[in-house]
Structure formats: C-alpha cells, structure tokens
Length: 406
Figure 1 (cartoon, one colour):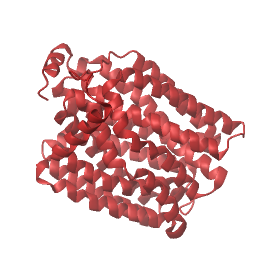
Figure 2 (spheres, rainbow, N blue to C red):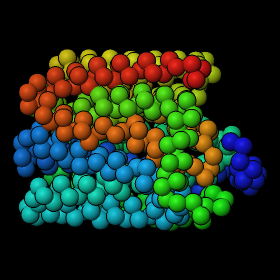
Figure 3 (cartoon, rainbow, N blue to C red):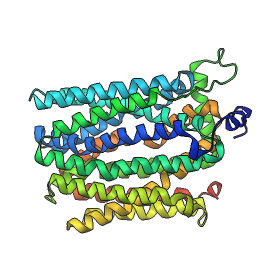
C-alpha cells in the first residue's frame, strides 16, 4: 500500500506478538466460528427431520447465499459506515435469530417458512459481517504483519472446525439439534462483547461528500477489473465455489443417507477436516517461501478438486475422512494467500468495496448452485452431484496460471 495513512498507522501499532486487540478480535471470531460449525451439522439435520427432502436443503442453502447478490451495495456501505457498528449489529442479529429458531424447534412450533426467512436474514448479516471483518483486520495490524495475521486468523477459524463439529454431532446424537443451535446463538453474543472492546476506526476516503453512491459502487468494480491478480483469482473462485457449493450443500445428506453415517461420525469427519485445516493455515507462510504464489494456488486448487471427486466415490468412513481432510488442508492454504493479496493491493478507502465486489464476482452462482444441488440430487443422487462439483473445482484451477500471478 502506498497510502500515507498506512505508514502513520504502522508507527502507532505494536508488533503482532504484542497486538492484543487483534488477538481479541480473532478470539471472538474463533468463538463465533465454533458456533457456526455446530450450526452446519444441526441446521441441515433439523431440515432433514422436518422434510426428509434434499430439495428443501438446497432451497435453504440458496436462501442463505442469496444476499451475495447484494455484495456491491454492502461494499459501499462498509466504506461509508462505522465498521465496528456493523460488526456489532450482525453479531447481535444472528444471535437473536438463531436463538429463536432453536427455541421454536425445541417447542415443536418451527415451520419451514420460518426456516426460509431466518436463513435469508442470517445469510444477509453473515455477508455484511464477513466483509466488515476483512476490512477491519488491516486497521488493527501493521502492513508487514498482515500475511501473518491472516494466517493466524485462518488457523483460528480452522480450530473451530476441529472442535465444533465433534461437539455438535455429540449434542445431536444424545440430546437434540435445537440445543446445538442454542450454543451457536450464545457464541454470537460472546463475539458481540469481544468486538465491543476493540479500537476499530473506519478509514475515510478524502472528498467523498460529492460522490454519488453509484460512482462509489463502480469504483470497486473498476479497481478489480484493472488489478489482474485479483481479477483472475476471482474468476477461479467463481467456478470452484460453484462446484464446492454442489458438494457442501449435499454433504450432510450424502453422509447421512446413502453412506448411513451417524451424527457423531459426521461430527468426527468434519472435526478431523478441521485439524487438517489448521495444519494447512499454519503451513501457508512456510510454503510461500519455497513455492511461488501461482504454483501454490494452482496445485492446491487442482488437487482439492480431485479430493471432492474421490469423496463422491468413497464408501468407507476412513476414506471419506481422508478425502475431506485433504480438501480442507488445501483450501486453508489458499484462503490466507488470496485474502492477503486483495488487502495488499487495495487502498484503505476501497477495502470494503473491493472485498464486496470480489465476493459478488466470485460467489454470484452460489444461490443457483445451492438450489441446483437439490435438483441434481433428485435425478443423479447426492454422489453424482458431488462428482460434478469436484470436476468444476478441479477445472477452475487453471485460471491461477495467468502470468499476473507470478
């Protein structure tokens, strides 16, 4: 970054090891991520119990991802509005909504229309929160600590993937998925208190008072299309995420129905994938010293797609665990590299818009892919749907060979 404000801020911020506010932020994220992993098991099982239909699971997943289409608008919002306030509103809102859904289910008064509405609102707040978090981390750490901070934050989230599903599967097996959702609700309230203690200051772009909302929105698109490394990573993610969504939407149904895994086995499978994810996130910096960014992204993306293909063919619990762990390991290597690339190439006042625009470009097919996964599962089965997802994910890796990523 060449922004003078960044240099001034870097002089005021402590070294990463003594930067307690950013570690509090990551700790709050860890707790909410932990709750999210419980949600990923409990919510699909609630839908499966209420409807027994893979199509219903596809519709709910599509509604959760539908707010992705509002990303460009939320990006301008991020750069105009206090980020800390947005983070607090999203944590509080998700905590209340998930708590209500859990309570209604436990009281046996939960209807599908309430799940559909809740999924849409939860998805909207999650999109706003994730973009705000992306734009907040560079405000809390020095520029030279950014890659390390992103890797640590990613490893924290993967720690949640290690611990959360096992606990969620155990609660569902012995008690009720409604109790698992209550834990998820509580995690957002803890995250709310953590964010409230942070000194996050919103960066203001100079002389924005006379610039229209539309012009600010288009600035994000222009910057992304002009900055080729960001553009080509977005194109790869566009295809790979469409494939990964086919896989993830049907994953619980596939493991529960044709493979007949119990809830606690599913929890252990996801938790072991979380362990692999932690190892991958912590390996990123070491690998970047030995492999080019382009080679690392291409190799991880291609092999990750192959792991999904093998997952669709695996029958034993052990092979399902191995395939899932390989995919999680490689995905966690890629995420901090891509996030740091965007943050490092983007001026402070455009961080929200560039992240939101990139999410919009990369994830625009996710709602359609989620719905399509339910339709495909009805005709091809969940294994066939996952196979198609793996083929798409592997093919998307070739965008990373573009020369701008050298």
